[in-house]
Image (tube, rainbow, N blue to C red; front, side, top):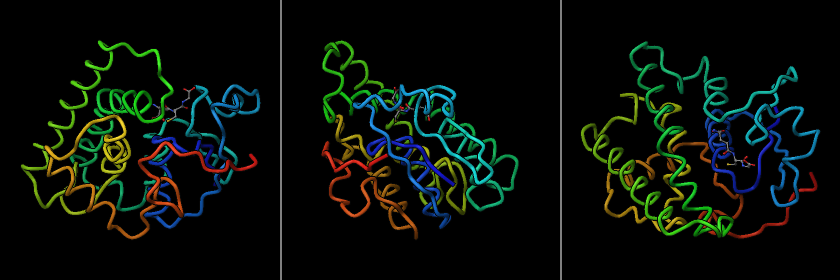
Length: 219
Ligand SMILES: N[C@@H](CCC(=O)N[C@@H](CS)C(=O)NCC(=O)O)C(=O)O
């Protein structure tokens, strides 16, 4: 399988995390937004919405949208629960992540951490900060009510944990302090202790929360 990604994509990180936990080999095709790779016709032919991540299956099919890719890879594994109610709860959190969680945290990271949103107004920043704190407070109190469980499931982690992990983990890049959310900090550490955990920057884990430039792959 191949993954079209960029070095710093949190959405692609979700896919790499699951592939790592499943011990599935994934060939990365790392593109550069700055160099215009996402606008190239070759990429547009495989990317329905022109964004990463895109998964190319072993039979040459292309799938986009991180949560759909997680769903696809998790079938038949313990990362997608058997129980119908738990499946619905996983979908609840996948929907929450896409609808309310990722956007404010990603915008703040782009603005403060990666400096790629210089035109954001102070009203934008105030709104994203308030939205980000609200979603983190919701996750924190949810986790407080089930200290030994995972986000959506009781015994084993699911793709809901993976979907919520990257942008929560990188919140500090957007000047969001996680210390008021101790249950989130514990949950992040539990995920990081799972066998097969992948860092955003393999080989240089200390760089996860920095806007560093690493030599880009030739692709
Ligand atoms: N809903 C999509 C969002 C994907 C997304 O925002 N991808 C970003 C990188 S993390 C991207 O491709 N940005 C470049 C662009 O939109 O032109 C998902 O979950 O996969």
